[in-house]
Length: 399
Image (cartoon, rainbow, N blue to C red; front, side):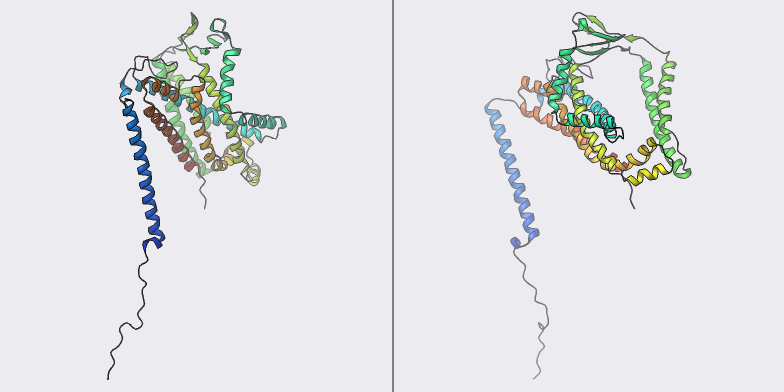
């Protein structure tokens, strides 16, 4: 009898599908979904509970208050403002004041921190010790105490406006701040500003062309010096073209204060000094570490081909040190921007101070705090985006 072949002989036995709780990938998906649901439920509970409490206490919600009249003055403003303006205008003034002190603080912090960091590595014993002493002193005093110190210095050591110090003609120093003369408004100033922009744009183009020329021929082009000359020459020509106006707005003592000119308030000065001196101490250590990360052989090779010390620092050391410096430097610049919120302690009208006044008058605490969080988030993200772009631009291309 012929036997039928067994069609299952030699076939592979496939295991049955395992339950989902034994599959790591499926378990991970389930856990993430459950976590998302829990977070959503928590947010819903907080939101609904807050809404119920606000309704029970008859507190209005929303941002409709931004169109109402603010009713309070702000001592410093980059734009036109009065108490009759809206809360939205007042918050804009506070945000611009924060941007002003943060931008100026970042510029001076980078300059001072770089200078102190290089001085820390100086072969001169006195210079190195002075830089080290500055770093140790500023890093170990809380920034808030430094703000109080500089603020108190103005009111303790400087006289009242009637006895103001007058070191130069048109310059006065008193407990109301630094008051100095400025040129009166003129169309020539706008023309000079555009001439400066044109000079910087032309200098940027010359710098790119100079690098390409150096890559082809090996000859350096003094783009920085040419840009500096253009930045002085073009605005000067624009000023001469408009008749060389020289009228000045000189401050005059009227009653108990000065009118005219420009006043740099003690609050702004104290905040700027405190933030710059404190943050620059940390930036100096970052610069020192970045410079020391460059191998000694790189410096010796640069000196062996006849480069001067300034050229060695500019062309060899700093380009390689930047890849170490920029990431921690970004954190310090972000810290400076966020520490500017301490301005409320010395009465400077930054965004936090203006928002707190708005909250006290309107009772819109949730909306006010949310605005503070959003504005500082935007400031931090803008700084991070710029520094990350610069980091990629200066990154060394390795084989």
